[in-house]
Length: 264
Image 1 (cartoon, rainbow, N blue to C red):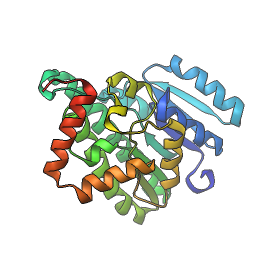
Image 2: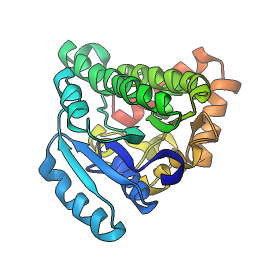
Image 3: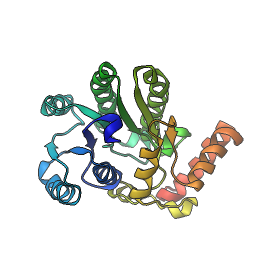
């Protein structure tokens, strides 16, 4: 991967979960890592681990990429580096009734989950296109593939990432840049734990971040998207090919209301 794309990989949301697993796996392939999260101190342990285990350089950046100012600071903070692999993994999730959350909360989700990945893909993807090589792994979700009552805005944001990444997979191939979209299902991460969703009640298996990360990286240069886990693949196939969209919406309304304990 280093020979194909270059020395440096940039991973946002690198402190935990899928982002941390991706940073570890990229470092294991010899890439130096720019690890990004809201606070640099939270990244210091990861930086020490990667440097010791893989003898790679690690730069940590503490920026809040849910703000336009944070995106600008990130870009400035790596202006001296040639980023060969971009993984904008940081995201925030919302659940419950859409209208119960303040508009400001939805606005922050939109900035973090949509604007941030788009702006980073535009900036670093442009440099990759000029060089004629590079890779971008965007992170969507199973929620982006289907109607998702009680996670309406999160699902909409991830549908945007899915559509953007799939289109760029074909568009950027002419420039020598590989783009893929990773669409995890339930994963054992702090963000998933904080949703309060009982995934077992939905008949869904919870995957480990390491397996999800491997599936995403394996897709680069091969496929437009990666859906980790057989059960997740079957669910996407059913909800997009077999079940009418109106029926899928009603089914997920029932499933999500049970998982979140919403009385109906």
